[in-house]
Amino acid sequence: MTVIAIDGTFSSGKGTLGKKLSSHYNLPYLDTGKLYRAVAKIILEAGGDVNDPNQAAKAAQALDVTTLDDPTLKSGPIGAAASKVSVHPELRLALLDVQRDFAAKGGILDGRDIGTVICPNATVKLYVTARAEIRAARRHRELQSYGEEISYETVLAQLHERDNRDMTRKNAPLRPADDAHLLDTSGLSIEEAYAAAIKICDAVFAVKS
Image (cartoon, rainbow, N blue to C red; front, side, top):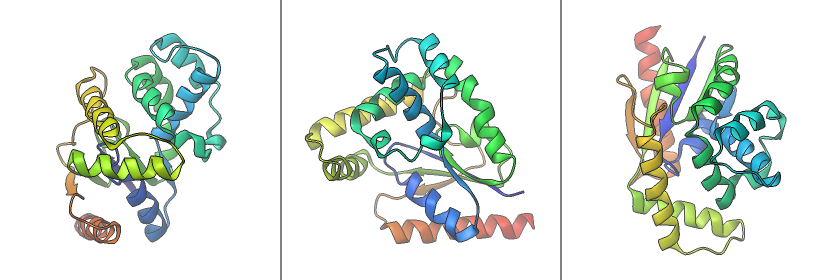
């Protein structure tokens, strides 16, 4: 059973790499961040409070994983709300089995605690990051493509806030697993980052085969 765990900072390219690696290795792919985004959307649409852990846990019970392709999950407001609900231990526990059940059949998962919590025995662990200014520029372009009006400066400020929240939360903080392979995409194109990830994965597979 092959499991590739991809962790890393916001807008570092985890999702793009996950999808491309999924196609290359013919493995199913799960963007675990969308689980938290879907929960955040449920709460927001109900007029609830994303800072309430009980509401977050209840929303997880109503989660329909078939809705994860909803394009609205990539919006700025839902992304910000998802970062807030993700700090709740009750929610992370509620979504733990969903992620582990997916990984049990083999696959690629990206998120922030895959290699450290969800799949500590993953075949390959990647930690993807890039300089904050570059990640903010990527996110700004993405939001503009959705028709959202927001300044680069605001996106950068939100990114710093999100990084701090992800890295300092008490439950499952964002950090590289001890045996993760670091991939900095700051100066890399999508294809260059993809080639670097393939090189890492193939090297690990060769050692473990």
